Image 1 (cartoon, rainbow, N blue to C red):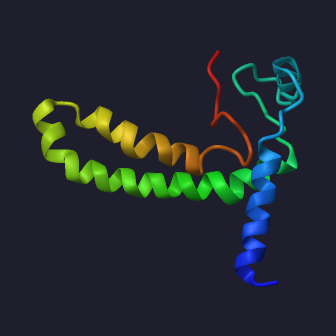
Image 2 (spheres, rainbow, N blue to C red):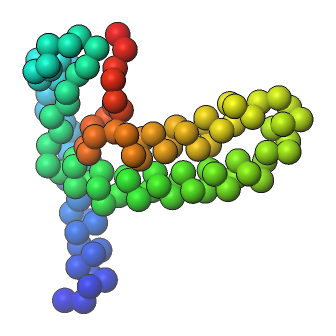
Length: 115
């Protein structure tokens, strides 16, 4: 089997598995907080969510961060005139970068959760 077909098969399987409904409730996620800190909640994502995140979501988020940085640089003169450079940088670079590099593998939330 060629490497391209193998990659296509792996991507198809992980995409199919990631679309399955997650069985669990918010209460189960809250009970997995072993640290005892009410501000930090540990998620326990299943293996298929980790694989889908690793193979599909992370590369797309990294590409989105790079494209967002380029769009931010191109739009910088206009955002500077409009006075919203900070908001544009947050939306185009920081938010996708945080989701790509800070969020745990397969988790739906990133870092600390404020209640």
